[in-house]
Length: 118
Length: 110
Image (cartoon, rainbow over all chains, first blue to last red; front, side, top):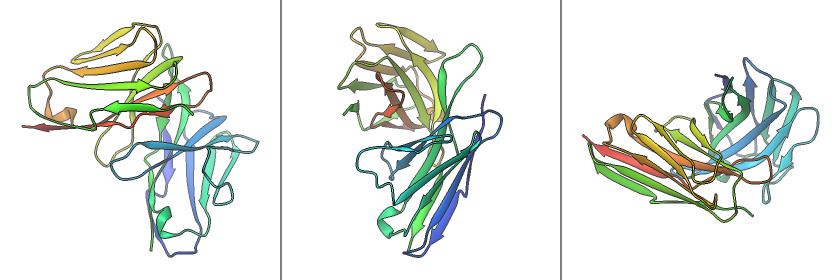
């Protein structure tokens, strides 16, 4: 299979600070990565599609200036939560699409990053 | 936009009982995938269904894709405590992105 690594797994920050979350595809190249947000006991909500070398595509209702996405290389996408506030506290999880030999194109998820804004 | 709903939201069963979760999309899907998320973990891919009326089995798990390609189901026979987690369906329509269902949380009493 394919491995997607996400860092940090947990972060606690003060209100007003910015937090950067990294998502790396370890053994494959990912031209496209996806960022999801998950509130406790709820589903994964797609925030944006990160495209290598170009601007991210944001879902309706997601603030581009609030959630900055950079996909500078084929193995790294970053999500920066700018001027974080308590309502931004959530579980952020990235994924990349990869086709395992002989199988369908499936999403491989990072371990997720739990953000707590005080 | 596309919406994918799942029922039930929660299911609490006795070990050995069967379990089924249903997934319904507001639009026709090109394919549907199922993922399992253990408590505190991240989603893990289970299977993909592509064809209308398709049925696939993985040991005690049976997956179905509806004839109209707008609904799907996951059935677990004789649940075990290791089946505990949240099961998500995820549908892909004409666009490339995957939209996740609301999820069904399965709890199994030993």
